[in-house]
Length: 130
Image 1 (cartoon, rainbow, N blue to C red):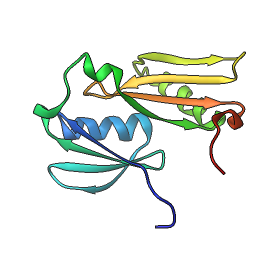
Image 2: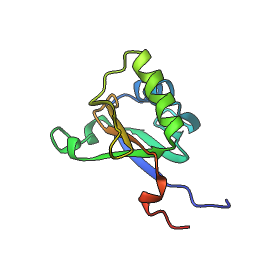
Image 3: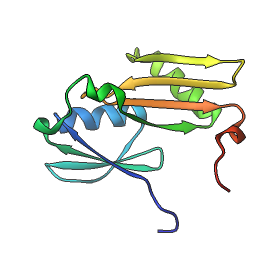
Image 4: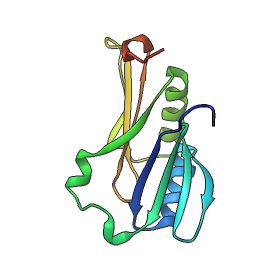
């Protein structure tokens, strides 16, 4: 492996429903899978979902937690357009703040985990290490 890969693990209520959401809504690819867990490749990260309905954190605690990705502007716009066209239910509709050069959308997966997708016209403001 030439570069580290970010990994996130989530307990979910329904493995198949979760797989469909991440594949169909966000374009994830399935990696390894068993009847108890699935590795989903999403925005360059590995998200492993485990069928553990009793371990899904109850609301409202889940609402404060989220994960997501910062995409380049064109990729964010293409995803926002596709999700809007398929009548996706958003927690925050795709929004562009022209004065800030920032865009954001938030949606919830079947267990209510929030996924935030952002973009910046000027990515240098992110302060990414070189």
